[in-house]
Image (spheres, rainbow, N blue to C red):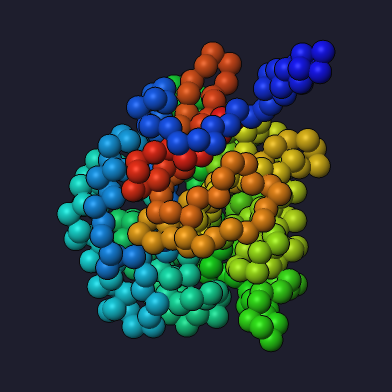
Length: 340
C-alpha cells in the first residue's frame, strides 16, 4: 500500500508539474525543430578562440542576440575600443555568422568601456557610436540620437507576434554603492533613466496584443542574494520593472540577461500569479567554473561551463509555445531546458 501511494504521488507530481523542464544533457538532434529560433549569449573575449560560432550556426538560428560584454575593451581610448570591435568583426568564424544570421542586442560594462561603469563614464557617447557601428546601424538612424542603445523589435512568426524590448542598463545607470569589503549595497539610484523608462512603459503597453514579450539586458534581474552587480542593487528600479511586467496582459513574459559567467534559468511568480522566466546566458569564451551560489528561483542546474542559449518558438493554432535551453559548447549538449 505504501508503494502504491508513493507511485500515485509521483504520478500526480509529474502530470501536474508546469512548466515542463529538461534538466539532463540532451543532444540537439533529439529536440523537435522550431519554426523560429533565436540564439543568444554574452561574455565573449575577442582575443580567445572564436570557433564556437560554427556550433551556433549549426543550430540554424534566425537571430543572434547579444546580451553584453560582446567584446572586452576596458579602455578610455576610442581607437582602442574601435580596434577591439574590429578584431571580432574580422574574425572568419564571426563573419560567417554575420553573413547568415540577423544580429541584434545590447551591451554591458566591458564593451561599454569600463568595469561596472554607468552614466558617469566619460566616453559613453563615443562608446555608443562605436557600438552602433558594430551593430551596423546606419549613420542616419534615429537610434543614434538617443541617450542609450535601447530599442524595440517585432518578430512575426506565422500568425503570431513576439515583441523584443532591448534595454540599456549602463548608459543612464546611477553610481553603485559598496561597503568596505567591496560588496554592492542597495541604493536609491536608478538603472535606466526616466526617458528610457517612459519608452519602456509605452512599448510594453503596445505589446498587449502580442503572444510573447522578451526583455533583454546585460544585468541579472531576478536573483537578488548574490554580492555581484544586479538589478537588486537598485530596488526601486527592480520593483518598477517587475510591476510593469506583472501588469502587462501578455501571457508569456521572458527576461534574458548576461554578465554572470555562468548559465541558469530562474522563475518568479509575480503578485498577479503570472510566471516570469529569466535565462542567464553568460560565458561564450570563459566562465566561472567555481560558481555554486544558492538561488531558490533556479530551475534545473547552474551551468558553469562555456555555453550559449536558444529560444525556440513553436506555432500552435491558439498560441505560441516557447522552449528556452542552455547549450554547452564543449560537449554540444543541451544541459538545461524549460518549456513555457
